[in-house]
Length: 216
Image (cartoon, rainbow, N blue to C red; front, top):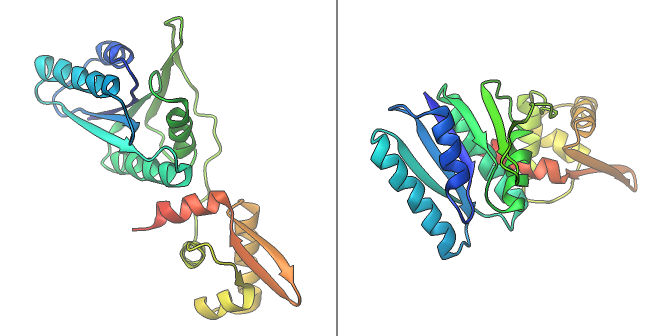
């Protein structure tokens, strides 16, 4: 089974072209991504894709997903969760970035950098109608330990917490907490600073996104 994920703008043609190239089978799924605020042209393009699919392959579901593009942290986490849920079903993913707002395309790409998905094809049609495959060369996030996930959750509300307080909440020694924070800093999800005699830690922008991704 496959899931086609596509950013969509004012015209359905880039998506229709990609669907014709790959072909559709019963059990496939299509996810159309558009901004929460969209005009009539985008709505019409989405309806055209739905009509095109229903006429030729009735067993394929088309999902119209609106993304909060003007809140990049929320949007990237939202997209990463949705894309990851498709991959966890064992579906092959085909992601097409030929249409839609540039900010939405950027957010989809950034969401993909957070995921470990091997069965994925990433493609785009250029303005002069050349179809290109984009190699998966992005850095992937490391596997987080349970302690690191707990730290992400503790800092998710934006507060800065001292190393000793984090150690107390996790019920570990300060030296163990220091090692946990050091690894998280190396992976760019936490930043810390010394205030008086205490080391204070808070989430980076990357950490804020990941805290939303791990949230149930």
